[in-house]
Amino acid sequence: MVFDEYYSLKEASSLLGKSKETLRRWDRNGKLKAFREPINQYRIYKKEQINMYLEQLSIDYKDNVDNYEAPIKNYKVLELFAGAGGLAIGLEKAGIKCVALNEIDKWACQTLRKNRPNWNVLEGDIKSFNFEEYKNNVEVVTGGFPCQAFSYAGKKLGLQDARGTLFYEFARVVQEVNPLICIGENVKGLLSHEKGKTLAGMISILDEIGYKVVPVQVLKAVNYRVPQKRERLILVGVRKDIATEYKYPNPHNSTYNLIDALKKGTLYDSDVPLSVGAKYPDHKKNVLELVPPKGYWRNLPLDIQKEYMGKSFYLGGGKTGIARRIGWDEPCLTLTCSPAQKQTERCHPEETRPFTVREYARIQTFPDDWEFMGSASQQYKQIGNAVPCNLGEEIGYSIVKFLNTYHQSLSKPK
Image (cartoon, rainbow, N blue to C red):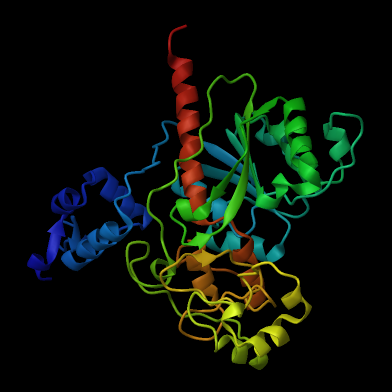
């Protein structure tokens, strides 16, 4: 090892304007991986690695936002509709321990067990589980419940009116467990579903079971260290006997692009690993060959536009996600569950193909060592449905900050 090619932790800290503790945390979280000095195992950094990071900062402008908050107690979460573990990984990285995860999809359950044998994975329909053993034993309940319409009875929707929906099951579990805070996540479309009545009903139900809902926000993943234009609606309920306010994580100043996901740099310390991937049928490949990076169907010759779009060609609107080739210097569009699906193309910038499984995982900020079980199509589905891990981590820090503030308030003299 040639030591004049490396910076010490202290030197890297000074150059980057970050504390040594921040750099240690970045190393642990994989944001900026350190090497180890052979004898004493001190953290050291390649000079080219630090220079690359500084160059990235100069391009994006310096990101002064850091939502990190260390937990002052051992906080626990019960996760519902856990999927392949995107949110659970993020909460774990933020220091919140998963005591149990419920998921109905058998392949997602296998993924969870494969990667975290110590997690208590409850496989099956949520309706068949009773969660009262966790009552007053976990601080947080989370769940990405599907968006479903309710049957309305009277002016104010109650818990019993939501029976048969998966939000009812989410609320039932919250009522059984009595956590300090509950977090639901969903698609942005929930805001306008049934002209807003569905979301209003959910808020009404949480109010009935003793939870005050914080003003709902849609978080853009691209603002939380995710190289993807993905939006998630976050529904936060705080138990009414708690005076502590919950605050959403602050958005970062800088963003990551596709190149940060797939190439060695500040987000990952190596190029994306090789893996299996879907292929386009020949007719679609022939069309997408004609699309430049950051281009879409309108970049095609007019006769091919009409043939490829069919009746959609005459309906107006941008439809900018159709026949779309992503550029290296932009965040990816929202990933779908099926990468070769008609009219939601996310084509590789240089090769005319969909993203591979591991490229999908990188764009969703999964760690490279997180293995997905099942066929390639099952793996794509798990990744496409997930909460991006880094977004989950940032939400995790906001939860930790809320819980820390609550427990600190308990110790203050009245």
